[in-house]
Length: 389
Image (tube, rainbow, N blue to C red):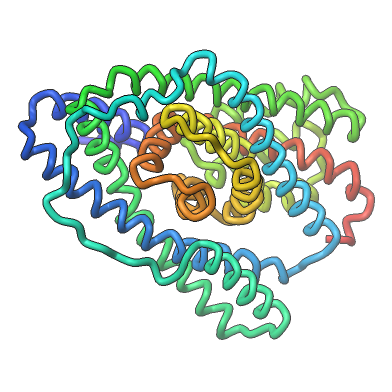
């Protein structure tokens, strides 16, 4: 008999439903047991985030040295600025839209609800903070390019594989349980009704913003490349639907390549650009992230520091490099930045993760569709000068 495999999205839905059920039926001590796991897993996340950045970003930077040229630099810069612009777009639009249908300070007003404390806390201090990990990644990655050290390159590549393995075998399987424990606590404390409604509003807003941004991105690409933006965007629909269903930017590369071929993009350009963009162009994930973050600001009555949000957006664009190597990699790479730059608490980050992952597919779908716009621009600039690769 063929085994039925449930994807991460299905597991998240089951975790949410189970969390609600347990929140209604478990006694106080039972919720505290789940809270103990919740606190432990949060500590594990804090520990793994700097290692994730060191393990993924360092090999990505050192790998840039192989075959680097004008096209590579152009793809990297276009992808980075597109991701950053998407984040600013989501921040501005969400800040205007979400306050109209999310009650401000809803969590700050609930001071008398039951508090569930863990039975014990196990501290797992990270080896360094996130910004230190980013700085070290750039130093080591750039050093490998300059020194051409094959041994150090192999060490960082192998370490990256170990980090990926830890994420895929420990962190990702534990996320549904982590979300379940959080939903259970929200239910037991009487908050779940408001949070469920907010979650759907955040998902709807983020999804709509990804579509609007893709239209704008293709209009710009169409003007520069001299093609009909709406026709080219329509031809990317198979890639969008595939990304929506399997929630992975990297896994959709073959479909994205076929769509780009239909858009008339030369083979050398699409074969070079699409795999690279799958690792550095994160417009959908950036929009999801900022829409979820704005919702957290509103729920907890936080007045965000604009300078800190700007800093977070630029750092997130860097941390997202090679993050698609693991499931929900952009989220994982940004957890530490939320705490160190924005100042979100463990509880707030956990709720943000729930909003982000409740419907994960529309982020990767926008990512891979946006890759086609970058490919159009690169084809316009480099199709007649392929020797620059």
